[in-house]
Amino acid sequence: MKCRVCREPAVIDVRRQNANYCCEHFLRMCRDQVARAIDEFAMVQPGDRCLVAVSGGKDSLAVWDLLVELGYAADGLYIGLGIGEYSDASRDHARAFASSRGLKLTEIDLRAEYGYDIPTGARTAHRAPCSACGLSKRHIFDKAAIDGGYDVLVTGHNLDDEAAVLFGNVLHWQTEYLGRQLPVLPAQNGFPRKVKPLVRLGERETAAYCVLRGIDYLVDECPMAAGNRHLGYKDALNQIEAVSPGSKFDFYFGFLKRAAGHFRSGAEVDQAELRACARCGAPTPGEVCAFCKLVDQAAQPRTVTVMLNQRGHS
Ligand code: AMP
Ligand code: FES
Ligand code: ZN
Ligand code: ZN
Image (cartoon, rainbow, N blue to C red):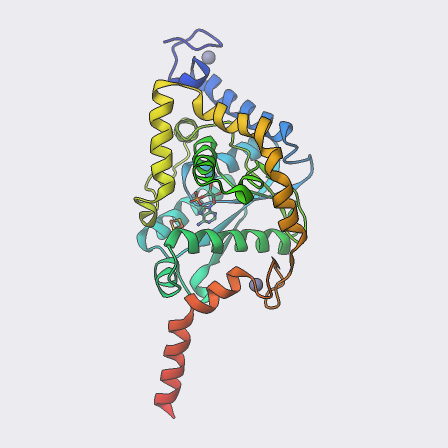
């Protein structure tokens, strides 16, 4: 197995590209793919301040490292979701990476700030953990980016993630989601610009990138996600990819090129109908945003306990 570029012994094959790479040229290929995605979709402009949402996993640490390597100013944001040892370990990996590179990491703890954590909050609010988690993360990402004066919010979503979400949205014809499933969402209506610079790289490549760069990432996946639909879609696509390399890339990029535009008008109407949440000011179609409603429901037991304690003392 020889490197496609220099013919020295290769350390990794990328079947989708029908190519093998040595360490140096694999890392360069990853940088080139990210630079190309940024350029192709006008994700980040020179001089932009980026806020990278980091979970301590391979994707978010890789994208943070790659942005810094490419010369962008990028700080990190870690959200403590309160998922037991998993959250403690993810925080430690995010902190270790930030301090090893001298980068700024902002931490927001869900329990300290909003009075709930994902496992108990989701149960109390009768929501699936991943749905409560996704809603909480999206709200806090947006707020932190706007409050911190950042130009762009970056996440570590990779090609496998995006292809799996697309697969689910197509299976169920979620047309309003299809209209918004883009690698860049422009800043509008009080939302920051949101970008996914890893869309041209698969998760096997982001893991290899971290290993070859000496980035110590959290290998464990979130325990609450086990058995969810998204992982099922990923498995299905992996089986297709095994017999037909390049299918995921064609599926996702073919959608962006040929189909996404057909769904955009519905998503734009949705955006036009947004107003400021009466509680927190975040953009929402209703009076109170979904996050504030979740906080009300999820943080309930604590309020009840406080009331009971107060009654006990009187
Ligand atoms: P997930 O929703 O777990 O698939 O993660 C998608 C992206 O959200 C990751 O690539 C990160 O950029 C970001 N992210 C996930 N968990 C956290 C967290 N606890 N704190 C900050 N960002 C996160
Ligand atoms: Fe959100 Fe697992 S990281 S439920
Ligand atoms: Zn080489
Ligand atoms: Zn709100």
